[in-house]
Amino acid sequence: MAAAGADKSWPVHAEVTGPIVMIGFGSIGRGTLPLIQRHIKHDPSRVVVVDPSDLNKAYLDKQNIKFIQQAVTKENYKEFLTPLLTEGEGQGFCVNLSVDTGSLDILKLCREINVLYIDTVVEPWLGFFKDGGLQEKSNYALRETVRAEVRANPGGTTAVSCCGANPGMVSWFVKQAAVNLAKDLGVTEEVPKTREGWAKLMQTLGVKGVHIAERDTQRAIKPKPLNVFWNTWSVEGMLSEGMYQPSEVGWGSHEKWKPENAGTHADGFQGAIWIPHPGADLRVRTWCPTPGPQYGFLVTHNESLSISDFYTVGEGPDAEYRPTCHYAYHPCNDAVLSIHECFGNGAKPQPELHVLDEDEILDGIDELGVLLYGHAKNAYWYGSQLSIEETREIAPDQNATGLQVTSAVLAGMVWAIENPTAGIVETDEMDHARCLEVQMPYLGPVKGYYTDWTPLDGRKDSMFPEDIDESDPWQFRNTFVH
Image (cartoon, rainbow, N blue to C red; front, side, top):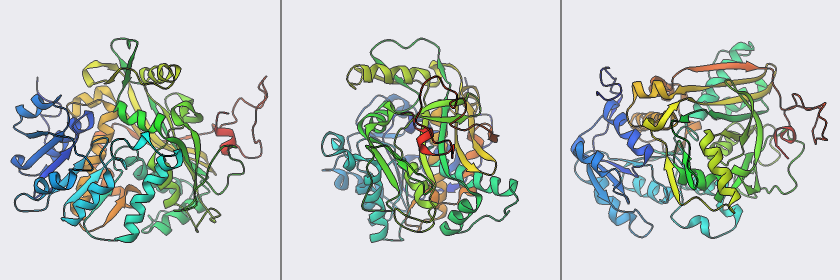
């Protein structure tokens, strides 16, 4: 059977003139490689995949892709990666899709040797989550290490930080949603050109906050067995952000209440809180088009912080304007069951971790978007409704969740090649229109929906007492399940 999309002519967006080194070849690496092969001109003989596991070696051998079975560590990364990234002529590209690799250290190395770089998360070195306090393990602290490097060494070779589906694509969705909302409210049809312009637009629109609102309805063909953690993307990634890090929220200027145990930060942009509890064990109320109202897990993510930061008017904890932002994630039902089993066993992960591939899934979509709320039209969801059926037709070797990530990596790579001296950037700082132009063919229906729903719906007459703020439906007090 022909590979998905093999009968279509695909555009070539850019060219890598040097080696391409991909660190990590799990579900996301396996899905990203064919998109690079389709859309980026390169010399296939100069592609190198590095992974400590040889699980997918046969896949690479069939394509004559060089594979090195090696863990990239804090001790060996400079000596190991430098010759791979600089071999031969042209400018190389490092595509870091691995867990347990120090993103910042590898990013800095790439910039020193004039190699383009992209990753999907600020990943620490192996063992980071075993030591130190919760605040030190927060995404805020990890992000601040990268922002400090931006301040210390501005400009230079482009390195794109945190460019997957989320963080990543959702930041482009926020911009497009703001443009759509501004047009519908009759505010303006002009697209801002600066960070300050975007922040002022959001303030003018009256957006109080943003949910990264997601519902994954993909169903496995067979039922999940006991003692196995199933997910539609990296289980290790889910464990890191959902169980080993504290929950985090970009904290809006309109908020009047916060959880009693919430902590704040004295450094950085000072516009976030952290809760000393794993996000996969905390819930918030949110809304997606297919299910309507739903619970989502309050899992920490870089975009919860970067979006609040990017759209801030003023500075510090008492800024004139800042939107609240957080993830509100309902993973596939098998992942929800896996999380319940894990926490029920003292938060000890199951002995077997498994990512559902496209052949194991019966049907469903990954509905991933952004819910801009609190404005004159109440709430507006904008995002991707990609099905497993369409995914099979257009891209090989991945499910719908994976394709939303891998296509964002592709878009980020294209943008970096077209802007090779932009310095270290987050996706909020990139040209959202260009990135979505590259990514859109892989996102299925991308639509916007207005809703009258608020977190107070159906709760004012509850038979049980509730701690709510009736004066403003869009207070975090009403969203947070407590």
